[in-house]
Image 1 (cartoon, helix red, strand yellow):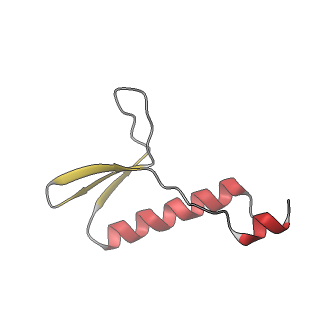
Image 2 (cartoon, rainbow, N blue to C red):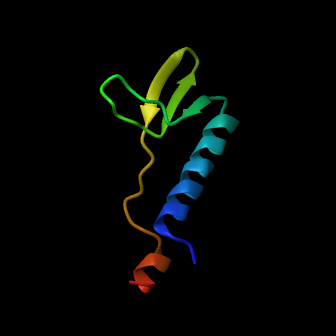
Length: 66
């Protein structure tokens, strides 16, 4: 059985791998000056941004087990 945390970790790993394949540099769990902790700091072609990985709807398997 996959827990919500396991699904989130798998999803974040998938995003990191995909962004890396696209040529982006990804750093996990940066800490910002205001204390925020987004999932990634992403750099590509001299530009950088922070990414918070979210999903709109949980996988069907979680609905079935509630």
